[in-house]
Amino acid sequence: MDVVMADDRERWALVLGVSSGFGAATATAWARAGFNILGVHLDLRGTLPAAHAVRDGIAALGREVRFFNVNAGDDEKRAEVMGAIGELFAERRAAGHDPYIGAFLHSLAFGTTLPFIATPERPRTISRKQIEMTVDVMGHSLLFWARDAFEAGFLARGSRLYAMTSEGAILAVPTYGAVSASKAVLEAHVRQLALELMPHGITVNAIRAGVTDTPALRRIPGWEKLILASERRNPGRRMTRPEDVAEALVALAVPGTHWMTGNVIGVDGGEVMGSLEGAGEED
Ligand SMILES: NC(=O)c1ccc[n+]([C@@H]2O[C@H](COP(=O)([O-])OP(=O)(O)OC[C@H]3O[C@@H](n4cnc5c(N)ncnc54)[C@H](O)[C@@H]3O)[C@@H](O)[C@H]2O)c1
Image (cartoon, rainbow, N blue to C red; front, side):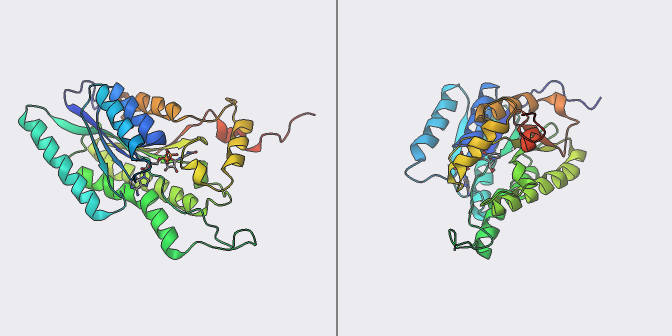
């Protein structure tokens, strides 16, 4: 039988975007579920105390925790983090443990919200460098982190990889053009990695969250309207919360999901079904 039922290995989770939003909530929930946590984030002085609070909260749960404050889109920084994880795992092995990354989350929010076409209100348009940087960090970086972790031997049979996507992958939303492109790329990478990692017993899925009030959302021009639209059309009659996604990811990062791969899994209270809310209603 191909099902991994018991896991005697030491379970670690790697979370990219660990200091806020879905990343912070999921790292905390995975720590509660027994994972030690490796986290990557990008914070300057203003938001660093919040990042430290997330790290300290995980440590208070009695788990091992290492955070790296680096740009996840930078190849050299990624190599440094991989090297540090390698050293840490070697120490754990020397102490008689068998560490591996059992759960991985890509939850990076980094990019530009400039329009493609100028309007009198928004005359500045997106540059080639800006769209490339957005798609690189929010899309392509999944491939490079996943591949490096696999080649270093940190991923193994039973590892569960997840990446945060949004309805923007298939819908056009004003001011969201570069992020939409990233999400389309991210979902393509999820499918491709799922295809190429399944022979190794490793699964890869995208999580499509509903609109959620996080610092990233508040950087999108017109975010107040997104919140109102989400509250109106969500059959759950509220917005999604980071904890909704974190709880789903605890439920999913288990051996029993070993045959689920290459999917886009909605965790949105059914928000996507409410896109035409109002249409067809009786007066
Ligand atoms: N908020 C929403 O409504 C929503 C809905 C669906 C999907 N998403 C997606 O979820 C993901 C996380 O978004 P969030 O709302 O939790 O955002 P957030 O702003 O709360 O958190 C973003 C995290 O990414 C980190 N980060 C940003 N750029 C980085 C970089 N270059 N290198 C390393 N770390 C970096 C930040 O430090 C932070 O920890 C994003 O991919 C976003 O598109 C968000």
